[in-house]
Length: 287
Image 1 (cartoon, one colour):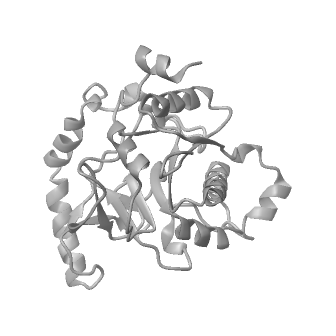
Image 2: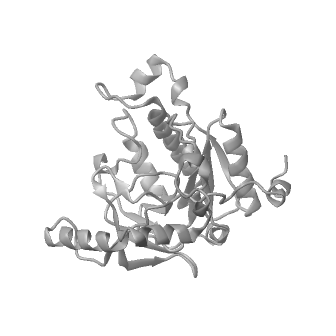
C-alpha cells in the first residue's frame, strides 16, 4: 500500500452486498485498502471453539467470529511495518476528507486506539470525551481523550504497539473484542468528534456477524435519519449533552473520573444513505 496509513476492510464472504457497497465507497473516495476475510463464527467447528475460547466462557458465535476477524487484521497490519493502521468493518463509511489523513499519516500519536466513529456507551456505562484535550489530526479532524473504551469496532485507527500487545493476549477468548475493561494492561483511547471521521450506513441494522437484524422501516424518523442535523437535534431535544455534562461532573467529584472538560459523546452513529450506491460510485469501483 502506498498510503501512510494502510486500511483493512473486514467483510464476510457470504455478505456479498455489504462487501460490494463497502469496497465501492472506499474506491470512490480514493482510499487504498486490503480486504480481510472475516471469520464466520457460525462456521466454526466444536473443535475450533474449544481451541480458541477460554473454558467456561459462553459467547455468541458471531461475537467470536468478530473477535477473531479483528485479531486476523492485526496480524496483517503488523506485516506492513507501518506505525498506524485503519480498521473498518463493512458497514462503515469513512468521510472522503479523511483520505488526506491516510495519505499523509499521523505524527506523535498519544493514543493506542483512535475511533473515527463509536458508540457512546460501554459495558461499564456512559463514555465521555474530554473537550479540553484535542489532538489535531489535520485542519478538519480533532481527536479527544476518552474516559474509557467504547463499544463498536466499526472504524478505528490502531498503533503498531497496541496491535502487538493485543496479539500477545489474544487467546484464549474470554470476552468480546471491544470489552476493554478486561484487558490485562492499560489502554489509551481517543475519538474523533465534530466532525466524525466516518459514519455507519444503514446496513449496520442487518448484521451477518451477530445475526441481529431490524427492518429499517421500523425505525422512527427513518427519512430524517438521512440528515446529520437529525443527530444533533435529537440529542438536543433529549438534553443529552446537559445530562452527560452533569453526570461527568458527578463522577469527577466522586473520584471516578480525572479532572477534565468531559462531555457526552453523540448518541447516533448511523446515517441513512451515507455511502449508498450511486452511478458515479459504481463507475469508480468497477465490476
